Length: 90
Image 1 (tube, rainbow, N blue to C red):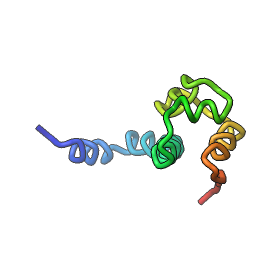
Image 2 (cartoon, rainbow, N blue to C red):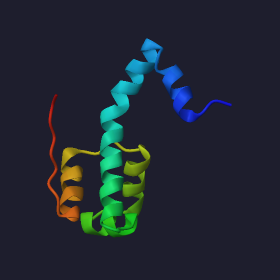
Image 3 (cartoon, rainbow, N blue to C red):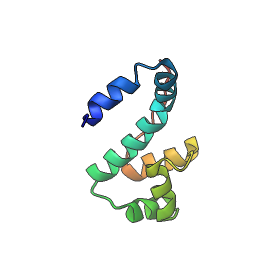
Image 4 (tube, one colour):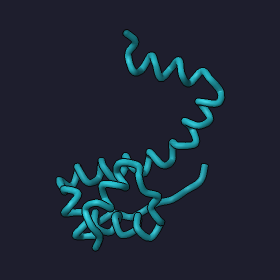
């Protein structure tokens, strides 16, 4: 049985799959940043939602990739963390 890492490596040799994977990278970077910061602050999804002024289900959808958050919403999340949202281009 192949490991996840080996399986992923093999899949990414296909140009179409690699292109699709790379296209999703920014979305998953945002999700990962929110989850990591929330855990660092030792906050539950419900606590974060209360600070942002939304429901826990909205935070859950964001963290599971089921939402396309606006910059305004991400700014509210950053504020709840006592952080600054930084957006850039490479």
